[in-house]
Length: 369
Ligand code: SF4
Image (cartoon, rainbow, N blue to C red; front, side, top):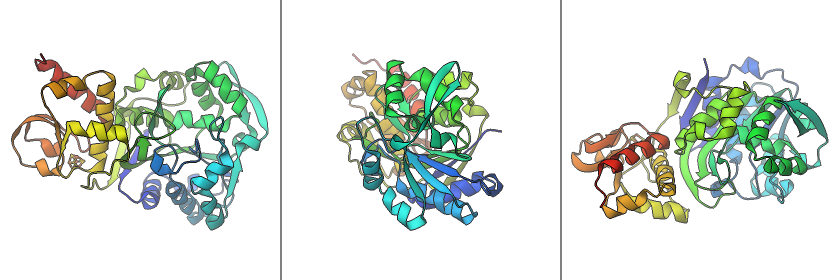
């Protein structure tokens, strides 16, 4: 069965190791001649920006691999067009990993390339990626200005030269991304769901979500991740195409989801101006950051649909948090803690996609005028 491990918490390195222990049999990695770790270092900004993979998560993966005797570990990346990968390695904290664990950092912008055919397309791919015996894809779960979502499937775009990235854009991104995932087999995905961006892949509106996700199937991971940030996976064409090409399955309901860790009360500190504005629609009392982050993502999607005006007109705030436990009140509440609120969406934490659908339906019932 397709398995997904979700670990909630605030210590990404330890959470990563726990999630790997829960999913992997060490024999899957032991003896692999060359293991590649592909983070998302789109540009030279730290992970707190919401744009790049936390080095703590990669440190957790490296420590897991070293514990099981893996030796030849390389961290590979080609940052976005116009961005210098070596600067990104430095600014994102990866140079420290290189010295601490003696792993190799490989700037794929300097790599040789190979042409391959996949899903009816000719693709140009960095050779070092194809030479790996085991590929660990370590994306950030975040929104994307063109494709709505970027997570596991799209992260492999950092495995092609800049000229090919330009060609992908000219072809609308979706089909080439799906085909790229046929050409490059991901063996394991570890998602940085600690702090992704609300609207844009290069960061600027980070929202703490405090979770790590680990699984084998990049399609399943992307489908689950889309729902977490309030999107319908089937509205993202490259996910549907990747499923059609046999890369994996979007059937989240059939997957075995193992949840670890704790939902900790402690409202996140919002560095994002947009998230700040959206928080004015929330009545939070001791909300966990995983729950609060889901609600912020849901409100961003509702704002895109123009539905937040309805909340303003009715002076409605969405109730959330452990402080509402055992309270009976009027209004709309999300999460199990607000079960006593008259209109309640259960879940601990609920996904943003479910919150979007629930609030949209509730607003339809309200006479807005
Ligand atoms: S439902 Fe309550 S306990 Fe569960 S994540 Fe939300 S705030 Fe935390």
